[in-house]
Length: 446
Image (cartoon, rainbow, N blue to C red; front, top):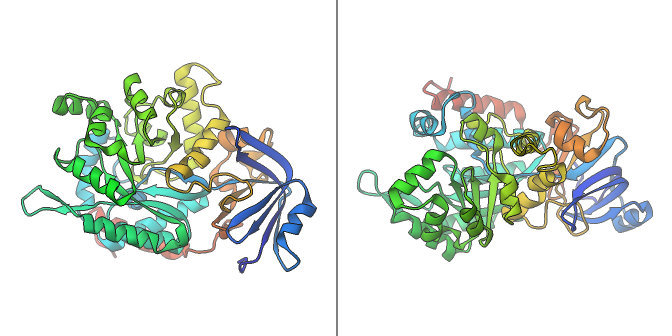
């Protein structure tokens, strides 16, 4: 809708992580965007206007609006939104092996595409401009992400079923093709990674082969780590070591790694991870709903490990709303610590923006500053969840509903403006997703 013209966000309250590891709040601020980058942030309107040049530009008025970075959802399985409300009130392993894995055997490529578009649409509506995805048929999810215009870090499985029942064969050529696809599309918005699902799902020999493949390709790994007590106990019984030490022996932490959940880490494991290029991803809603436990986020941060926020899949959440995750993450930390100052709002907002973007390979996003990518969301303070506003940072983390998100920009392009999706056909998405959901849950499409 901007036709490539320079953009001026005029007179906004800007809320952003800053270089001092805090969060800066600037009222009556102006942000100039040229192309896909922010070129000016400050209170000098003349300076902002000068950046835009003498030609035409687009202007968005900011009175009564907050401007903050687009969110990063650093762990998820986007197309699993098709299984939302289909398997509830079950612990993780029963949920996976009795319900989810059987449903996933019915998944077709078109179902993953339909589910990916549905999940992306919900994320756009709730201010998310980038997400990590670990699922099947990732090439069609790449297509969905490019169509929508969001950023994504997507996994290649890098393996196929082998000739013997239950065997798996590593496929470096599959990974190479996927990396090539990601690098050649989306104008830098798509990052490739390799899936290593967890420490419990594969034969022992497969793990070092996969880790070496990621290292040779120069890409990151996405994995699930220490999600439940059972996972830890089974790992100790199988290998004589806890998951972190065993994964380290497999070589998984020799490349950058997004490790989701990390509910059961001891001090020794946190010390080991702090020396690696690992970002943990806190998924409070999923961990609570599946009865897995509460990750020791404050201890993880204190040990020097970066921690981002994620929703997990909507089959175990049952939504894809980072606003809900921020609030729950903060409240759980405070309640567990019996300390209201634990995990303050500024830390939570950084987890949802700057930390997650860096971990997914988008280091020039997640902040509102000159030179950063123009990945921005606008909150309307007229929404009842933000009235009265009070402290803007507190309002964002503790009280905002995602329906307060008025607009979302990614890479300098508006994906939603005044609650209207601009790149996706919402009605068509709902129709196709409903057909796919009926099919994978055992019914027919019609």
